[in-house]
Length: 115
Ligand SMILES: [Cu+2]
Image (tube, protein in one colour):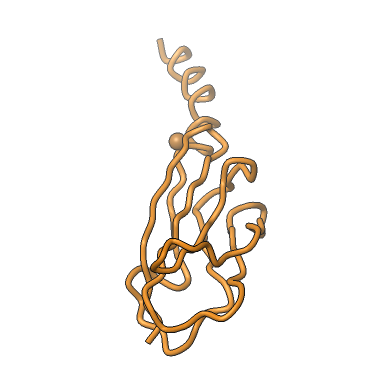
């Protein structure tokens, strides 16, 4: 019985290591009020994401996309995009989605403000 438990644990641990990931930090952060436009938006996850299914897009108040192509850094635990063009004061929406290595997909959005 004990031996079976031990084997079961060995089988479970690798799955646990790659289990669900979550966001550690976003920059700008949710609801942040900035004095000037940020050059980029960056999201840090607790684990690696699968690049094919993971991205950030940033939109202005009119729904116009103002972000470029998503970059994958730090062993795919960090994703970031540059913001393009003239970015006036206003409210901006960051939409992100990711897939962790265990195949779970997540998505979310938040806003920040430039004064
Ligand atoms: Cu998961």
